[in-house]
Structures are given as C-alpha cells and as structure tokens.
Amino acid sequence: MRRIELLTIDHDRKGFNCGSEPLNAFLNQTARQHSDRGISRTFVLIDEMSEKTIIGFFTLSLCELKSENIPPAEARKLPRDVSGVRLGRLAVAFQFQRQGFGMELLVGAMQKFVGVFQAAGGIGLFVDAKDSHARRYYEQFGFVPLSSNDLQLFLPALTIQRTLTGITNP
Image (cartoon, rainbow, N blue to C red; front, top):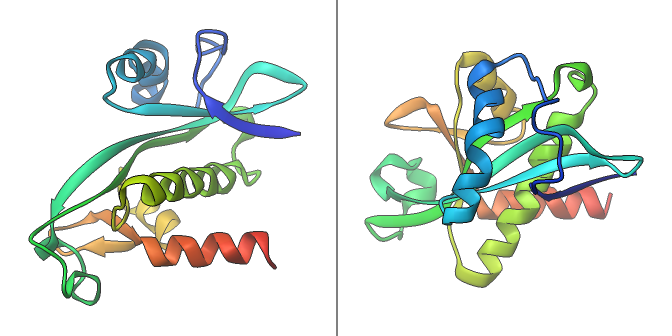
C-alpha cells in the first residue's frame, strides 16, 4: 500500500535519484527548508512496507497570475489578478519510472489542490513544464498552455474536480 505524505526528516532524501540533478538537489537541499519557511510544501509518495524510501515527490506553492495569461474561455469574468496553486516540481525515482507513479503523484497534487480550493479558493493548478516532452505529459491530463508561454500550463479547478470524481466514482 502506498500513501502520499508531507516530507519529513525521516524520509531517505539522499537515496532518491530521478535522473535529474536539479530535482535531486532540490529534494536533498531545499525542500525541507522551504517547507519550514512556508515557501512551499513537498509531498512524497512512499510504500508503507518501506516508509523511508521515496518513490516520488511533488511540491506545491501558492501563486498569483494575470487573468490575461489564462486561456480566454477560463479568463471570462475573472478579476485581473487571480490566485491558484503551482505544482513546482514532480519527480519519480529512476527505478520506479514508467510504472504509473507520476500519475499517482499528479492525482495526489490535485487532491491537495481541492483542499486549498475548499479553504481559500483558487482557479486551478499551474505548472511550468521543463520541456515539450513534459508539456505533452501534462496535456494528457487536461492541462492547457497559457497564452504567455506554451511551457506554462493550467488545469482549471472544475476539470480537477471532474477528474477526481471520475477516479473515485468510475
């Protein structure tokens, strides 16, 4: 059984390697500091049989954007400045890649978004894809590019709610 939980000092950050040095370094050197300072929160996917081993992780933070950068269909009737949640990083350890854990992490990020949405609002989940391959990955889940940069993507709150409803009520 797997679960997603907030990163703690007990997790084996040094044993994590996703093949991307910047993501590995963030997890090892920065994630807990950012959490302690309230900058962002990093969540890890673990297997209950090996609770210290990190299968993958994602980081969330609050963000604010100009509605003019959001796709017109979503921007209608929104104020000039809108808030949401930014999916800052998402990575799966090399030995666990291509087994569906990325999708499991993304669904976990959507679930965390819903908690923020219910408590404080927000129009959706935003992500900065590192390249066109990552952009295509996010687009398969309904993310749409922002008009200002095709590597910046947006998943509307309504899409998130519908997706999660479909997952829990197939």
